[in-house]
Image (cartoon, rainbow, N blue to C red):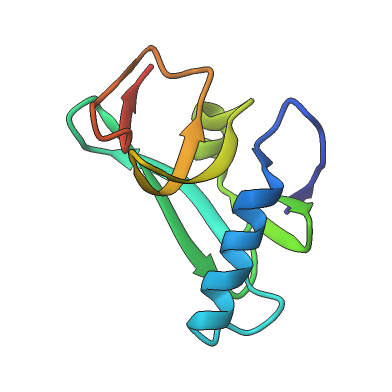
Length: 116
């Protein structure tokens, strides 16, 4: 496990961190769990974002802590997510987590998949 907290890695906004805490409370997810952030092949642009909760990091994960939230990112996903800012939007265009990924060369209309 690699523990880092630098601006070149993934960042999470205060708004997104509060929403993660809210989701954890609403779903009775124990304190100490972390948000697993990842990518996998698929979607209309080639890669899709994944979010889920894990009790602990896995071997090789990078762990980032911000505003009481732990992010767990596997090495392969970190390669595609370097510099990404995880935000939360509750505006007129819909409600949900938003990935502001500087590595995405193309994205789909739904914002859930991207290509590099």
